[in-house]
Amino acid sequence: MPRVNISTPSSFNHTFKIKVRVTDLNYGNHLANDKIQTYLQEARIDFLAVHGLSELNVGSDTSLIQGDAAIVFKSEGFLHNEIEVKIAINDVSNSSFDFVYQLTNLTTSKLLAIAKTRMVCFNYDERKVKPVTEALLKMTKNQE
Image (tube, rainbow, N blue to C red; front, side, top):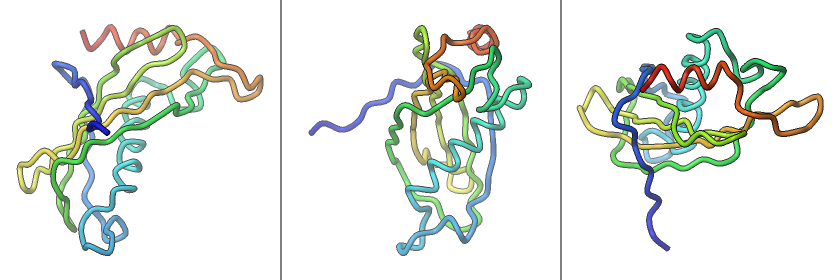
């Protein structure tokens, strides 16, 4: 099976930083792979908040639900390392889009991971997929 390949945009329009906590370590004493997914969500929530949005409200009675995720690991992270997560929106369709992330370990100056999450616009009350909202489209135009 071939390796996952994630296309990274030429620019990112939001940066979030987090330090590796003791609860983020695995038995190998380095950053656990499942914690990367947590870092992605924290960066995504921070990015949305800057635009007055949240995962439960991206406008027009619409929320976000994760359709898929992919992570390509490049290096390790260790306790107290500072991780920078850059985020951008990519591959917008009628009802979904990708958040693409570049994680850099600022302590070691190494690329830690490249990741993407496919987000689907969704109405939890109706249990239906919804179109990408104007608020989200505006965010994509701001990064071009």
